[in-house]
Each structure stands twice: as structure tokens, then as C-alpha cells.
Length: 391
Image (cartoon, rainbow, N blue to C red; front, side, top):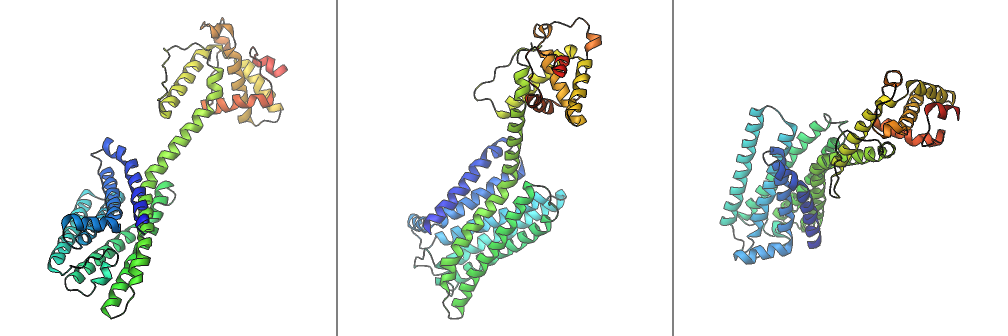
């Protein structure tokens, strides 16, 4: 069981490390601070809840079971952080958010103070690292401390679960955000299982029964799953959007490669910008888009309207849809224009008014059509639209 606590703490630490750059870049963003604080609290809970860490805390302070109220305080703070994040995540009027924030701070701050007061008044000389909740379930003041932490946790879970389930219906269809809310909802539902088995074991001691195995064997694994689900729930909306953005950017960058390759010999009006090995994908994509658009502007006077229209008719005769025929014809015109000596030399055509045309398709569609030209016709480097049609 000790290893599982360390593993979960490590996973939460990875999540915290992932969010840390966003927190440092936007330190004034309350949501960024809240998520970072929540992950830090969750990581601390599992780190200090490991039996070996509990023993270390007791030894360092010289106070038997000092780690118990310390970990209970961390759990209470984690509950408060979850509540605050959900409240701020859902939004509302500044006045209502501020009022709820102060209510959470006040109520859970009071609970933490009460935990330490009960611990100070109680008899806790026998160190218990795994079964403190049930061992001291009938000890005056220690009993109250245990019950207070469990009830505070249960109330926070119930309130947060209610907020999440009412919010879930409002965020359906939002992709990653909805997935995160669902994970949080499941995590908090399991949190209720954790509280239930703990309370059952404690109440059993009050009635003279022994159900300690619920607290020592069932509750810790449930807590581990809860911690992972909650961490994933808070991370998924941001991480998912980042993954989707990078995937979309990479897909577009690769899709533009045929067009970029076809236009690489066209002189650019702007000075070339070197891309270092460490250049980000977003920067590379912006550079590729800019280079392509600049090359297309340079080719604009050399694009043959008549040849493009003949090519479009040819592709229609081959069974292509009007949209496909237009794309293939424009890709054909680009290949032909890029092969003309005057275009390669950066010179204006002899009769620009008669041959000038405008491209109506976006560059990604043009690039894909350029890639597909080889499946329709073999385009020669010195080809013209008329030549392609008649070949």
C-alpha cells in the first residue's frame, strides 16, 4: 500500500509539473493559481499519507501521531481547493463568487483549527500509522477530530458532486471540458464511497464491532483512484485542448508540404527567415503558411485563367465533382505557373491582364489537390494547363 501512495503522489506531481509553466506565465490568472494549488495539495496528501512519511513526521516532531491532524488538514485544504475551483470554473457574478470564496475559506479554516484543537486535547500516545481512525474511534477528543475530518470531507464531496452533476448537462458537446467534468463527477462519487467505508468502520467501533478492514484495506485504494480521477479531471480540459491543437497544427503542417515543395523555387518578396532546430511547431506552421501565400502572390500574374477552366472541364469529364475539379484545376495552374521561366526569375508576364486569375480555394485544400494530381495525371515539371488536359 505504501508504494501505491508514492505512485499516486508521483502522478499528481507530473500533473503539477505540467501545469506549472502555465501558472508561471499567467500568475495573475486565478484559475491557473487554483489548479496549481489543488494539484499541490493533492500531491501533498498522498505524499504525507504514506505510512513511512507518517512515521517520519512523528519522529521529527517528537509528538506521537502528529502526522494525523497534519494529513487531515491537508485533506481539508484539498476539499476547500476543489470547491473553490469548481465555483470559479462555473463562474457567476463577481459578488456571488467572492461571497462563496470567503464562505469556503471561513468554514474550512475553522475545521482545520478545530482539528488541531481536538488533537491537542486528546490522548494520542500510541502511534498508529495505518488504523488510527478506528483505533482512536472511541477516545475522547480524538474521536471528535476523526469525525470532524470525515464529516467535513463528506460535506465538501456532496456539495462539489451536486455542482458537478448540475454543470455536466450544461457542458455536453464541449469535448474535452465535458470529459473532464465527467471524470470529476465519477471521482467525487467514489469519494463518497471512501467516506462511507471510513464512517462505517468508525461507527462499528462505537457499537462494539470490528470492521477495521474497511478503513485499512478498502478505503486507501479507493482514495488512490479518486486522486487520479480528480487530477485527470482538472488536467484533461487544458491538456486535451493542447493535444488537439498540436495534432491539428501537425496535420496542417504536413498537409501543406506538397504545396510548399512545389513553390520552393518561386522567388519570395520577403527575406527568408531561418528556422532553428528548436523552432516550435506553431512557428514552423506560421512560416510555412506565410511562405506559401507569398509565393502564390508572386505567381498570381502568371496563372492562366483559360487553361485553368479547360483543366476544370477535363476533370469534370473524368467524373470529378465540381469542387474537386476546381481544386485540381487550380493545383494544375499553380504547377504550370511555377514552371514558367519568368515566374522563376521573378519577372512580370508579357500579358498579365489576359492571363491573371484568382485562386478561390484555401491553401490546405490546394496542397491536398496538388498531392492528388499524380493519381489523375502525371504532371510534368514544364507542363501547362492545356498540356495536362490534352496529354
